[in-house]
Length: 190
Image 1 (cartoon, rainbow, N blue to C red):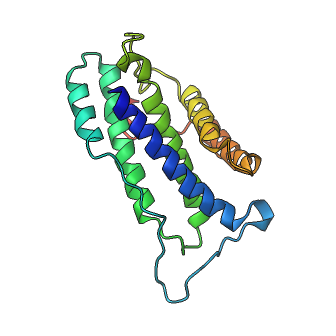
Image 2: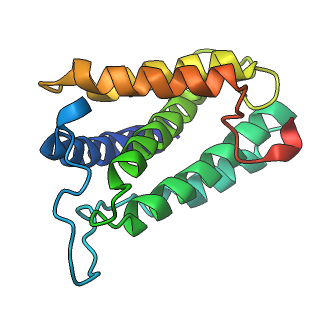
């Protein structure tokens, strides 16, 4: 399981790098080129393909069968669902769309969420700590957004223009917290 979690973390870093490269190419703030490479013929352009470890989902499904704590089970289910959503959004984003920059920042937060979910399982999977790791349900949304925020910073920290990314990420996280948006896919855990 620790190897699967490492693969998920590496996958998230690859996605964050590709997304960040595209954002940097468009500029920041008032200099943002919202129409960068807008295609007149309505064709599409996608982000570079990223290979996801195909054994991760079956490994997570096997892992979930070994769990008894409902919060841990929900956490793994959220991780699997979030991986699927991240992969789908990443593959389907048309970089020629006018709102591509907004979608790119959304992908960064999706990526940070997946990485946060995976990272919170590491101690349990390594038998360092066998206490429940599940964040879905018992952890207040504000605290989860703070964790996602921290992971987003971690994904972007080595970038040359990391402060420019941090401004937009912080602004989005602040709005989500102010409006008490849920970070979870499954609404039934509310």
